[in-house]
Amino acid sequence: MSGQLRLLDLVKPFLPILPEVELPLKKVPFDEKVTWTVVTALAFFVMSELPLYGILSSDSSDPLYWLRTILASSRGTLMELGTTPIITAGLIFQLLGGSRALTVNFDLKSDRELFQSAQKLLAILLTTAQAIAVVFSGLYGAPSELGAGSVLLLILQLVGAGVFVILMDEILDKGYGFGAGISFFTTINVCQQVFWRAFSFSSNDFGRGTEYTGAVVAFFHYLYTRKSWKQAIVEAFFRNHLPNLLQVYATVFIFGLAVYLLSFRVDIPVKSTKARGAVSSYPVRLFYTGSMPIYLLTSFTANVSLLSQTLFKQFPTNLLVRLFGTWESRPGLSQSFAVSGLAYYIQPPFNLVEALWDPIKTIVYLTVIVFACSAFAKTWAEISGSSPRDVAKLFKQQDIVILGHRDVSMVKELRRIIPVAASAGGAVVGLIVVFSDILGSLGSGTAILVAVTTIQSYYEILAQEGGAGAMSQVLRT
Image (cartoon, rainbow, N blue to C red; front, top):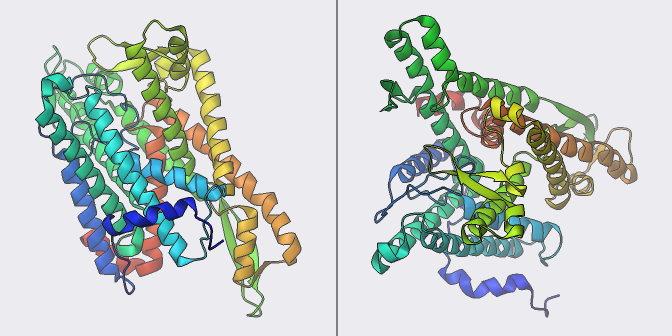
């Protein structure tokens, strides 16, 4: 093995120039973790608001329109690319490592570090490639009109911001903060979007007088300005050009439903073979694979949408391209929407009216999403080190056995529970995503689920590390 050149070894020449966050030499104190987490959150907020310098126009159709919330992306800002490069690089290497396509021994610290460095290098390369693609796609104006200087400046801004996001993610992942950076940034973005669409005082005039963007603010404004309470309530709940109260209630309901389902689990009774009488349980949650099926599904739909729109712009009359997807703009909007082809059936119905207007599309979309999430969840459990065989191996290393089962039969018992939990959990995730999209909640169903699972994991981490005192400290911060 040592005399063979592995694919992973090709990364070694790049290690001296790769930016890196060093592992903490000792356990990071709780207060310091809170500080780093808050600092990265503030940095994310600032980058999401700082516009890119040199943009000529940003009125063209946005190919990532439906996916920006879950990708923690904000159009026309330093967070244009969001966490897309990190997610893509992470998924590629997890799939390669889990499927044994890469020769890597995760028991060795050197191999683990090399694997993480290779993943980071790919993320930086993807950041550079995506920055070039975004600028030359005309998203900010035709490159010929922007000029060589502006094109180069835009690419450098996007690459610099992307590398900074990669380092912020590494800070949280290496223990200076709480949890994974990707999920954290997505959660921040979701909460920001929900709060803005519910309570924003930003106003516009659509020919019917001043109207506020925030659904809750608009409700009280309608009560004051409309002729009758009935008219005010109808407009507040059913306006379709701005966020409405029905979407606010739908969002609250989806959050509550996801939190309720997170409590569903199967407790496997286990005991230590060294300490007599020490009996505990190993919980297998309904959402066994967490947010990973959502990220896999998002990655798939994002690539299909991007490729379909790009091909349709270049070859609008080609039959194969039209089968892949045809795109049109809606009246009053520059944003393009899929109207037929494969892209149309994986594009969510944006409200209940659209879902009922084309029931065939709704049924196809529901079927595809549910089965895809279920399949992704089951596959991810197998390749990510969470399979029954991996859990049984972990039990054996820690001298733990399942009550009533010998070492040989532990795998069989785990196979009876874990694949079912992963598959069923993935299907439930898919159903919630579809239900949320049809109800038109503030933010996509996928992003809301990521936010809920992340908030739940943060709550558990805080409870374990600091108890009630930690909760109070976080609230004061």
